[in-house]
Image 1 (cartoon, one colour):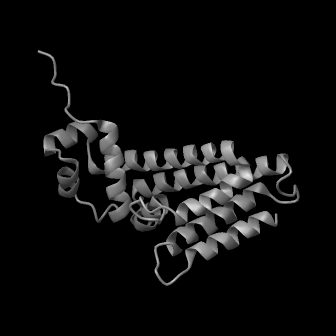
Image 2: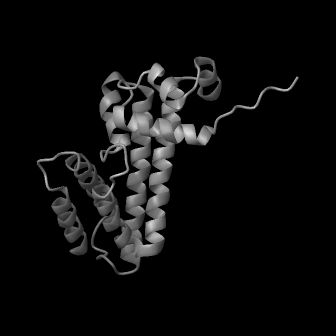
Image 3: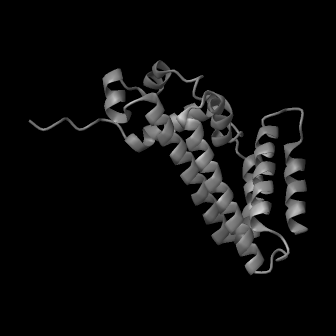
Length: 191
């Protein structure tokens, strides 16, 4: 007898779980919440994902991979410096996102004090994103968009810090995040 094929789209469930975890965090999302929101019975949940942590790791991976892909697509369309500036606008315009704050940073902040493995995974993904930013700065130097006098790795670290701060500021109603994004973009133009 052949095993029954699941009646769900695993990729769609990972996307849905990513959005739940992104909004509520690891501790704020219970297994029961996931089963209810994903419309899976406990046995089906475990068969599909193994555990809440395994699903969270898949959601983090999806979030990070999508971030790298989106950045590269923007670089193809707008050039390296244009992509870095467009990323700032994406944060401000992210009305369809579960939250404007970065899922990787939220995960790291929530779980690193507990020495949780997922904090390490979030950190690794943030390092990868910083390397993508550094690559864009190098490419911007190669095409003459910014001065070769700057260290791309240092620029990437600063940009990532600015971006994470912008994402958190965009969550607040007492801060003009659009103005901050414009200031960061203007700083990029001065490089």
